[in-house]
Image (cartoon, rainbow, N blue to C red; front, side, top):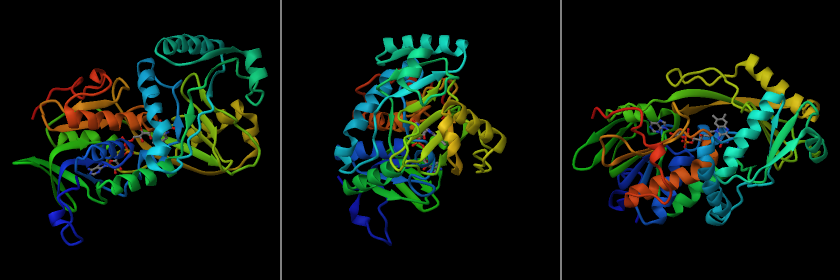
Length: 383
Ligand SMILES: Cc1cc2nc3c(=O)[nH]c(=O)nc-3n(C[C@H](O)[C@H](O)[C@H](O)COP(=O)(O)OP(=O)(O)OC[C@H]3O[C@@H](n4cnc5c(N)ncnc54)[C@H](O)[C@@H]3O)c2cc1C
């Protein structure tokens, strides 16, 4: 069903729908898409351009090995959606699943790496543990400084720049209305829920808060304390090269490096090194001291990277919860306001998180357990 088209048109934009989704990143768009596929009318409002924050600027890793053990099953379920995505959207999204190495550079790191890999394996990860000599034989392009690694065929990546526009087009074809530059500043309860924005009011029976790092601000509008801290992650991209520099995605036992070479030959260097900024000052600046450490580490692990120029580095916001598990569920004290936000590795988990949120909105239950993601686990409603 399309949103209330009786008042559609440029002068009178659509203002009523079954569900108002606040935030058009990967969580919001997958939620909107799933709702629309089920025949529910949806309006997505975003304070800036759609797909312009974390979902657009991330490094594109679809990593399973770099997830907390409890999140491994969720990441594999999300991969099931990634695999179907090109068919679902009718276009390529730069999907690649050639597997990845997670490396250790000290014996202590190696012990911890193998221990966590056993826990992840119990929860479904396919993984091999490689001693240094095996790693040298299998991946001579990785530095001999690396003393051990795990390899999983489950790791891969996709292109954030291809996913966003494709998701938007399919969602719009299904009737989802997208309103950009509509900053939500209040949410009111009345006969229906009213979302007040810089582009006027929008009415829905239910609201989905998928506002990424800003979700605490949205929850506070309805009296809910949602603890979220901010990471300002940096990523760099090298010039493209026809040579194969990084045949498989590479991550680090301590979570401080992600490396991959994408289809055009450029190498992406990330790892959560921190830039400068806060939600309130809207700064997303590079911290050059940190960036140099990030690039040096990348060259230590893949020496061939030292022959390439870095073309660009940037930073983006990632919201983080106290236990690093995402929020997904009804906001405490509310029956019609939901939230899905702040997954570590949220690009990987986004399709599943959006879908589970839509299932909850549609039928009050989910196809996968979501208890550990309860948005009320740290706070009580004061609404
Ligand atoms: C630099 C960087 C690299 C990363 N690399 C990876 C990676 O390689 N792999 C991986 O899996 N994950 C990665 N992540 C994490 C991942 O990108 C995020 O977890 C994920 O994209 C979050 O999606 P989202 O939809 O929740 O949030 P976002 O994409 O941030 O979308 C939230 C939206 O809400 C909107 N919004 C906020 N406030 C309001 C308001 N008041 N009114 C209306 N709209 C509002 C924003 O404008 C925004 O569009 C990375 C993150 C960053 C920053």
